[in-house]
Image 1 (cartoon, one colour):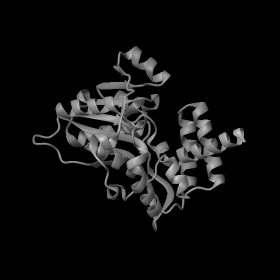
Image 2 (cartoon, one colour):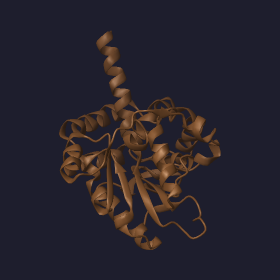
Image 3 (cartoon, rainbow, N blue to C red):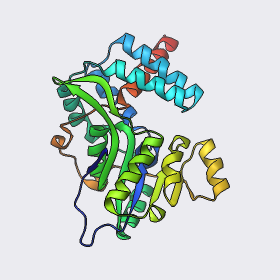
Image 4 (cartoon, one colour):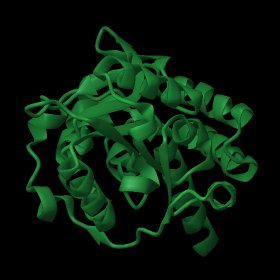
Length: 276
């Protein structure tokens, strides 16, 4: 199982759990995209890699998040990060996390998290982004567990292999595994997401929620009478939880971050060419 415990259970244990997608659910945008500028400034990518990854992301955005395009992005991610020094990525994330994630947190998410915690439920962040990018953010949110993608490393560099990709059915499988290990009842667990690609995650629990849903998820949620939430207010992580200690982000396995970096860089260059 690819979950990480961030806290110890309260006296009597957690009675159930609330599972939250991260990007565009808890946060107002992609956590990966939030790190675009610092990764580019850190010199981790060349122009060719940026252009290649931007093309892959463009196909993904035009075609939708289906299995074929997602697998294409996964292959592109592997090519892009192969050979990146882990220490450099660690340093950039540690230095940037306190600024790039602010203010992205949905204020309504904080309120819902507080309600679930008061009800005795564990808070679980589950994301396709890289585990050690997700973990510092999840810890700031007071999450108890994290499920995220894992990238393999060797001799201090990323190998390009993705040992676990927290996407689609893999999220549902991780939820089943964690629920079984903790002795919870899936029927009493809640799950929150904005994307129809997370249908397996939403369908596996008894209490699914659509947050700012895409068109397909909205249609399905309406048909199945799932709660639909509109979260639009944001709050600073620093204002809500205090300033982050850079040492909390000293190990970073890069997930979908690299592709979002490439897209941001390519789009910026395209705008400059158009204006020039």
